Length: 361
Image 1 (cartoon, rainbow, N blue to C red):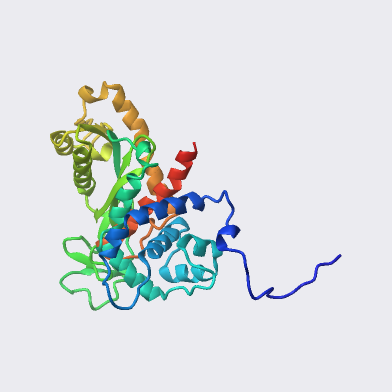
Image 2: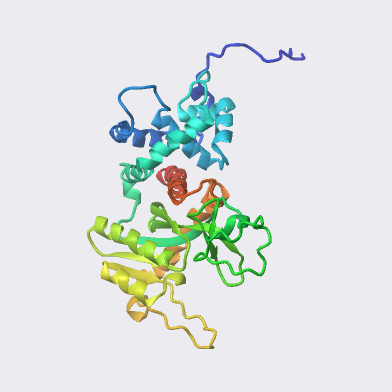
């Protein structure tokens, strides 16, 4: 018998959104972890708001929505609000009932700035890693560090001379000109820097993101964003590893690729109590000589060196996930503070995706 077609269906629904989400949906465990961490942050979140005035977007819902944006690679807050309006799964994750109105995109963006200025993302990362179910998954002795380029939200046309001499044209015809960060800057995003990833590659306006990964299960434990330059990776590594060494209270190891194989960096790591398991860079120079590595057999002869080199490659999974599924490939934010906040959100989202799988294993 043919079913009867009724356009639009009923006006009311008596099924809760939680009943519509499958019991084995991967976001269920993620939502549980997020709620646990947010409950621990309740006092810190309360300090960011005045005791009187018009109620703003609840920070718990705001942060949950930002995580959704990274999980599904939603490119803008405006599109996020659009999907929150009709996607029942998103409403369930954020904590909105089917009848609740969504927020204005501009209001949402301004409230995001409040969380960013309150250092909430860093606190969330710390509480997540100290969660009772997560802490046992982490190594407190063996780490890996690497960096990646984050393309800035600025075009090559915006990279103009700082003295204002390029105002006569639109910046489109820059071929044959010598353009350097010392003499030029982007008018759209002054914090971005023109940087070339390798010889023979094109130069792009970008930032440099740095992540510290623990070697047991490959979870990100720290991250920061700096200006893109030739020494940024090594200086950021020293800063992050110094903090890990202090937190561990004992000597730690750090796996790094051959870009970190310089005498000063290796010496700096050893001085702060970090054993540098850096890949040896013995490439042939332009003069035909083999480059001398700062890492010798005092380090490479130990079995731990090989283990660090093997686990080090897992840090690329963090960047690969963030650029393919998250929002890390090309940032939609301008200014190093906003880019750093978005980068940290990508690291948090990666951990939240990985942790339920590790707990179930």
